[in-house]
Length: 129
Length: 219
Picture 1 (cartoon, each protein chain N blue to C red):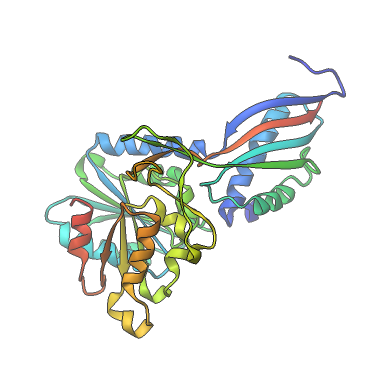
Picture 2 (cartoon, rainbow over the protein chains, first blue to last red):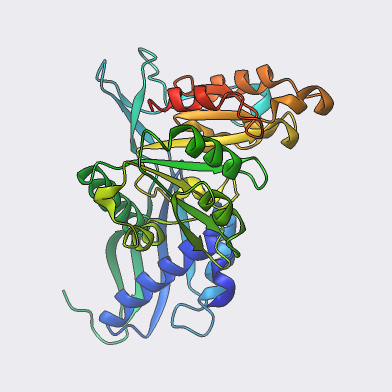
């Protein structure tokens, strides 16, 4: 769909709808009732915009009218130096208005690697067969 | 398990939508490493000076490395031609309407290069500080260019793109006083988000600071 390609939420929601449709068709579903999506905090996906695109893109498909439930997941990091595994260290600077995750280890301040939080996962689909 | 007619069936899928791009990016990285190509992804706003930076880096490094560049733009080959005139191979990637490059577009562009001949590849992303961060391309290092003409709040307003960049170029420092923007303040803002990144002040028109950018990249 032409208009779906203008922002990244559009292109990613297109992929979400396509993968749900594929699964639903495989199972001969008559209608999809609910889709559960998990979005990592490090993605650039705004749930409101994903919902907007979902509504647009599912029109005239068996997904039309289905509920899109989005859970947002905090990311996790791993420190190669001290072995820390867990949530991010946040900078709470008033200029940023929102706490901003950093790639510094909350325990020893060395550089950490991102273990999760960059995902966008279609978790479950409820469908009417 | 099979559901009966008219029943609501709950299917667990666990399909990672962003994985397809990540996997392609990993394949690109592997292919580039195997061919000994050091790849650098350059991101930044429209007009930040990404093309000027590449031009100056090419000028500085073309005798030491065999360089190629990918230039992502919605339309035209204007910028691609600007880089090409320095005598390096350039592939223009026109995305049409897409606001970012993705690993698949880069894969296709890689097919147009004779990789064993190339040592250094610059990939200039579409001018945008948001979407490109979502789509890794397979590069080894990432640069974000931010210019003082974008105002004093560019870093704090777009923190995520700076989060895992390797080198931050603060460009157009010659215009800092006219713009009433303090480059040191921008640098301090980067430091809060990403203390690991190397920050370089530059004027990519004159070439000032470009040597330090090359150094920061280990070139």
